[in-house]
Amino acid sequence: MPDKSKPVRTVDLKVMKGAGEKIVALTAYDALFAALVDESGVDVILVGDSVNTVLCGEATTLSATLDQMIYHGRIVRKGVRRALLTIDMPYLSYQVSIEDAKRNCGRVLKETGAEAVKVEGGRSVAPTVNALVEIGIPVMGHVGFTPQSVHAMGGHRVQGRAVGAKERIVEDAKALEQAGAFSVVLELMPSDVAQSVTEAIDIPTIGIGSGPSCDGQVLVLHDMLGLNDRFSAKFLKRYADLAGSVRSAVKAYEEDVRAGRYPDVSHAYE
Picture 1: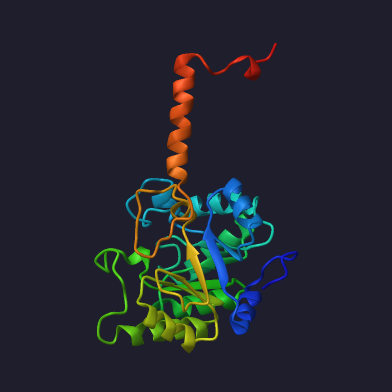
Picture 2: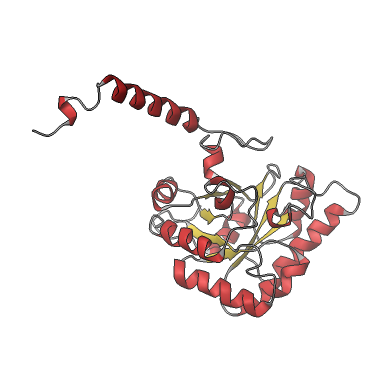
């Protein structure tokens, strides 16, 4: 496990894989939650474009903008002292051209203070990943189910079950490794597929809905805390019921105000 008195670096994750130590990752979208997550000892904090669905109420991540990701990345940075801060690159910010990708990813690192960016796709984005790494931008990859391709994939579907699909996912991950990615997210795939990928590459795999064989795991913070109780999935374990706690607290406040119990003398100035 990395020294908790020092910031986590990309190279630390590979050392953890080599030592058989699991990597812990979570999302965060603001300074307050980022600080709480960071203080709890996670290794990676991801400012996911899932902010678009979780906080903004959109149906998909596709309408997330570069300015939106920079804004959330910048405020999350204020709460992070130790974890490796990684920012999702939104749809069309890196797919149009390599020059666009360099400019946009560079802007994200420069304006947020993050250590890395994440892009979706396998062999098709490998040349872009290589170009980014060559100019000093650390890149986390993402294969399997890729939310920015949700319409092309026919919805939120487990990947890797069709004939030849496992081999294609493995090749995608290998291409990202060869391009210089320091890690790769494996999303929504059978456990045996994720295991094959994890064994086939030397860089760490971070799973979400991909079983226990990955080198680490990531969840959306609001999902695992039970704040976003409108979302459910087989892979999701809720570690709290904060939505229920919020509703109860707001109801108690509403009742106290209507009954004249709040504020009382102990909550008023003389």
